[in-house]
Amino acid sequence: VDKKARLDRAKSLLADLGLPDKLENKPNELSGGQQQRVSIARALMKEADLILMDEPFSALDAPLAKALGEELRRLQRSLSLSVLYVTHDQQEAMRLADEMFLMQEGKIIQGGVPEQVYADPDNLFAAGFLASGMNVIPASVKDGQLCFAQVQMPVPFALPQGEVVMAVRGENIRIQCEGWPGAQIMDCRRSGALHHIDVIWRGIPLHVLSLAAPCGESICFDLPDCLFFDPHTKRRIRE
Image 1 (cartoon, one colour):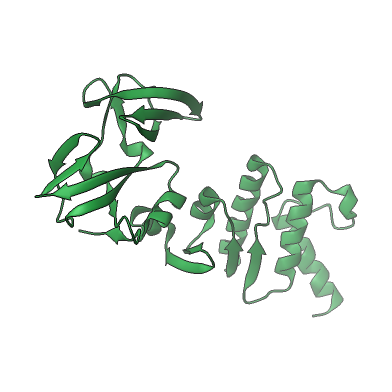
Image 2: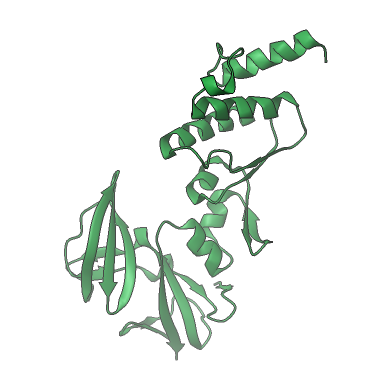
């Protein structure tokens, strides 16, 4: 590729990344966010079949990292790029990925589109890693009854006899006046529209996500919203 073509492509990429007037600037004349944009442009200049990005925004503050992630996502789609993106930020992965792979101890444990992996995790690690507040409750099954924290209910489907691990996401737990009493609210803090509520319920710590502030000393959740896992292998028990 001749020099003019390379220069034209560099100008085009910088314009796409909001830096049309920074072609001649030195690195020390750019902000942290601008330097990251230039790094993206440099990677895209090579027109590679696959671009590897290893936590490219980890050193930036959260609002800037989110904005740059959205810019990268827009470019990836408009230029039909294949990007292998490594991150430890679950929300970033859910927000940016077309397809995601979860790794544990160097091995891929589950892959798929983000919504599917979130809704249908294969094991307890995947369930807890992607959830903002996954609550684990020890339980057992005997004679068709599910028993946990002094509660006994019919099993939602054919669960194996003996101990099981029951997990329920924080957004599926309700704090109310009626239900299973014994909830002690330890902390409640607001982040955007959501209340993050730390609760001790019958000796079990729970993290609840709710649009409404807590009201009452009982909790309730629906068994169809729960996930069940083998206590030894941590693998999902499916219906």
